[in-house]
Image (tube, rainbow, N blue to C red; front, side):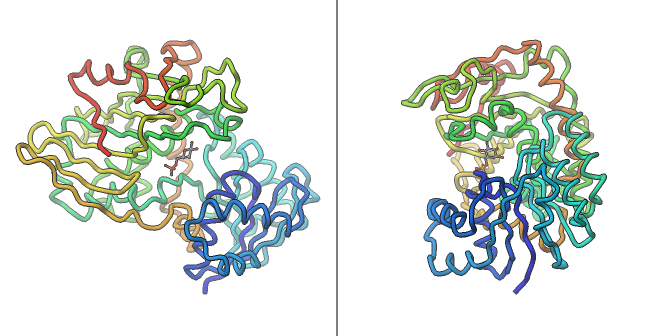
Length: 440
Ligand code: BG6
């Protein structure tokens, strides 16, 4: 049984209750023994916190074994903590050689929390910190946050999460090619006409309006999850495992900046309006009724990389779509027509062959992303986490788009909830004589 000390900052938040605790529970069933200190501002007793947590656990853990959950609960202690109050941090202990401090809090508190942790010696080499996305809201704020954190923690102690990197099905965008050299040849500039990456969600903003409204789809999904999928789909197939992070960085650095014309004609932003029995985005809780935040974005991009010359990539993501689908489609210049790699809802690989339909095989999407990533932090493996340089490269691509929106270069287009986004997203491909695949 592997032991660790796990301090969770922001323990009463949505992410902690919905994802992190269930992941810790599953990891504990797989042999991890974490001593968990759950911290948040609310003045709760451990008992009160556990009551709150078990209600959520029942909603989010399938076939919850109540005996195992009761045992897991004995690992948890709750400590009220105000991130701004240095004295509150004195209650925290990091005397285990494998201590993990997980920041499930808004990034504006990161610097203060790091400073207060360091003041009580909780930045010693035995401590690792896990930082939730988004790290900043643009390139400059990302750099500022990283600089503040690095005053107290070494790079080897920092694990920057993008939970898509914890999905085996996402990692397989690389391993599929790495382990099958014939596919690596096929999935390159020589044979490909273009690549499509779609992350469509039927969910709206749910109870996260307060978080989402200052953020929007470009920062929430495209800057991180979608560019991570793009990088793993394009790094050279023969990249040795230990060089994956560096190879991803090179791909992100090769993103061709969108010029004024492309910003105007090859970027689409949308916001869901009422439809299909759902309310519109601006009627959601904690959302500004005049909000100009995009819940949909589609764009065309290219990589300035010798392996990907002339292959455009079309990306789209949206909330309140007609279907839940995470998919990468490699479209060929000639037969076979396309290789469709579906990540969600079910992982599968489909090769569309001319004249004889499709060959489809279901794949196992494996362990939950958060569970896998927590176990990687425990093991001290930084490979499935972002290096600061990767984040900066991704923000460098996204920044000009955000700036162009400030001057309203691209209109914010309404689309009906449960549709597939604004017509302009279809026209984006139509103007290139192409169309979106939508395979479920
Ligand atoms: C999160 C975003 O990072 O990813 C959410 O903040 C989004 O808005 C979620 O719903 C999607 O993750 P998954 O694993 O459900 O595809």
